[in-house]
Length: 469
Ligand SMILES: *Cc1c(COP(=O)(O)O)cnc(C)c1O
Image (cartoon, rainbow, N blue to C red; front, side, top):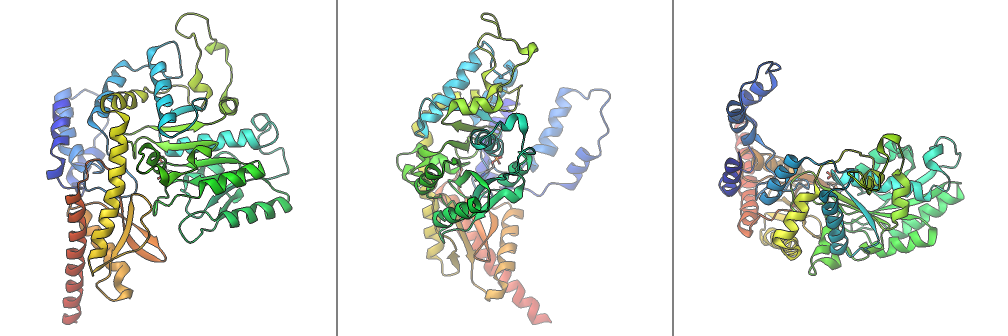
């Protein structure tokens, strides 16, 4: 299994970026009854190779640029395997893996320029890390014992502020934490994809005048659509003046802080009360691993700490030191996801990660230049970081949305590359997000050239269809 995995990873460039799942293979998976008797390890692995592996998402491929999906360092995959072999319980306990997780958190604080006194926890993904951060904000700023009383005992409504570009975890989290999504106030953008601080200040004042209690600002460092970074200094000033919690969703963007070359893109990040970010996006580790850092460790612990007789801590033995991670998040049983981060940082060094991140940012500028060079393409949004939004423009303007969508689908179905689409200024655009250490400049050239060729092909097909009418 290890050999087959490593062989596959070493030949990715020669494989299609994505394959349409074979209906026969999907049927073999979908229609199989519960196996009462075992089929054996060999036969089971053989079916994995024939029916599962070829029809994967494709996000490990060098020309996968869709949404914000990670790729995964092979050493990280092997670390996950040996972590599963050890299978330790990471609520805490008196064991070396607990030290490894604390060490990883320590290093991550340093990489993001966050104080060593901050607390943190590794979580499954950005959504969980953001949800956990918002739970801490709720606890710290509600102004009463929200853990005991919940949100049903008070008349005054708590309000949270975000921008029109905030990721939709925010809505789910507002609902789940009991705020209700109508108390998530979405503030308009400043014309550059960022939350407008002046409009935010107005929204807070008018909410206060109407009797609401503002408690938290959700800033974004790296929006999904265009990679824009909110003005974190301006938002931190407002948070300080109004006694609000400043939480930063830096799912991928916060990692720009890792390289001295790109650090300026997320200036002010260190002023956040909490930061959520993924290590399975722009730190190139396999799914799942993300991190929440909280500047005030007491507030973090106060959100989740509980006691139970069956978890009594002793001075010596296997539960000495207690269960610190169960006091910093909702989960009790947790996997040893820290191992892949620890091994990859040690094996390759933090600077290698910074270099790869800086290279992805350069590659986004390079792709933007390739787009601008072509008279048949147009760049549609500024390139803030590692995301390029562009489209084919070699046709009548009322046809462009349909043509660009068709270009995207053909790129994917032919296995050439997998960008995704979004809508910018009312236009459907092709969106390439580069968080992939396997991507080369040649891959970006191929993406550009293929978009142009497919666009021309689709235009000429449409013209010949018209001619036959
Ligand atoms: C990906 C992403 C999330 C969600 O993170 P998951 O790891 O997918 O749960 C949240 N915010 C932003 C900006 C993202 O890019």
